[in-house]
Amino acid sequence: AQKITQTQPGMFVQEKEAVTLDCTYDTSDQSYGLFWYKQPSSGEMIFLIYQGSYDEQNATEGRYSLNFQKARKSANLVISASQLGDSAMYFCAMSLHNNNDMRFGAGTRLTVKP
Amino acid sequence: DADVTQTPRNRITKTGKRIMLECSQTKGHDRMYWYRQDPGLGLRLIYYSFDVKDINKGEISDGYSVSRQAQAKFSLSLESAIPNQTALYFCATSDWRGQGTDTQYFGPGTRLTVL
Image 1 (cartoon, each protein chain N blue to C red):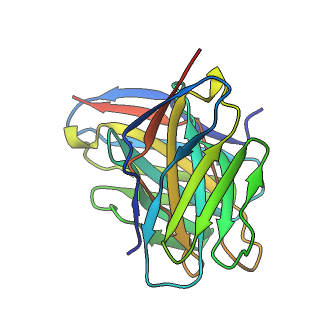
Image 2 (tube, rainbow over the protein chains, first blue to last red):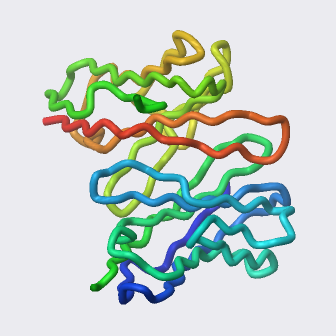
C-alpha cells in the first residue's frame, strides 16, 4: 500500500511570508493523485489542491501551489503570503487511480504569527 | 445547506453499545467513504462504496460495518463499541469522472467517545 510521510509535526511562519510544508510518498504505481487538505481547529477537512502523477505542470490554486518532484516522490505544499487564518493542520494524501483508496500523512500543524 | 452532512455531530456512549453514524450528501456523487481520525495518525479509511451495490473494506474495517441505503446515504455501524473506537469520524464523497483520481469532499465529522 502507498505510504505518505510528513516530517514536520509543527511549523511557524510570519504573517505575509511564504511557507513550504513537506510531503513525501512511496508507491510503485505510476498512476496516482496527490492531495492537500486543511483542517482548522473547528475540525472540518477542506480540500486545497490536487496534482495528478501525469500532470507536467505544478498545480496552483490561488495562494496554494504544489511543488511536485516526481523523481524524488515529493509533493510539497507552498502557501504564499500567509494569513492568520491559515493556521491549521495540513494533511497530504495520496490515492491510486485504480482504487481511490486514499492514504493520509500524519499532518503538519501550521501556526501563522502576526 | 452543507453538501455532506453527518449525524450526530457528537456522541458519547458506553462499551458494548451499538452505534450508528449517518452520512447524507446532496452533491450527487456516486462514491462515498468513511474514515476515522486519531491524534497523530491522520485519517484512515474504514469502508468505501462506489455505488449502491458496491461495498469495500478499507485499511481498518474490523469492528465496523456499513450500509449504503441510497446513492445519497451511507451509514457506519459499530456493533459493539469499545473504547479504542473513540475518534473523530469523517464521511466523504467523490465523483468518478472516468479517469484519473477523484477529489474527496468531507463532511463536518462526528466526534465519538466510547466510555
